Length: 240
Image (cartoon, rainbow, N blue to C red; front, side, top):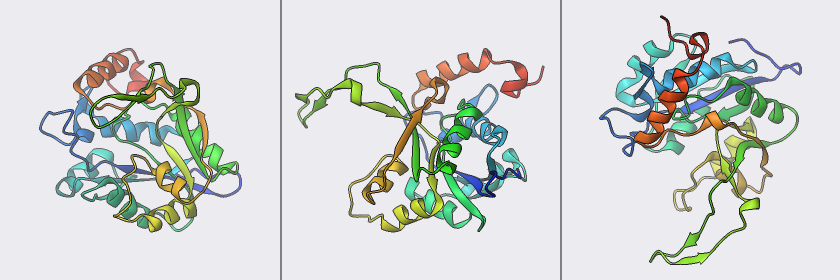
């Protein structure tokens, strides 16, 4: 991976993959659950490697499995021990980036079928001047806000709501500032863009991809298996 933008900027991707993923079950970390005979993490990293603009990948793995993950991903991917929380994993990975990295993408290992074209689209938007960029999709379902007792409080207008995917992209200094500003006493956020929003930095959106869905439950894994089986052998990385 030696990709460099026309301006000389280099792009890195951080993959926090130390989570247990208890909703998926299976007795192994979610990122290492098999999909088409290989761990989901391998599929995710393969897509990142295939992207034109990515020049470095850093994976935060379960601390006891760093050597195993390193062998799975090969010498071109840097693997380090992840933290007990996602924010700890990303913070540690940021410190491990090459000094000349200017754009950082953060990608969920549990989105194994994300197309390389989406990775490049996010990177290109940040390289084009946006400080923070996230891929999004329109919602198909009506959304209700409820209270602690399960009663409906209101129905937000669906046309202004979006489902957020990864990779999410940031100028390096913006993401580092967001993590430096993170306080354990603050309400939890579920994505990196949430931390950036707290800085008052504008977050832009680009169209996401249907294939970039997150594998969270067993049914998602079944769906991912079906989609993977429909891919050409060369694209899916399987041999006959």
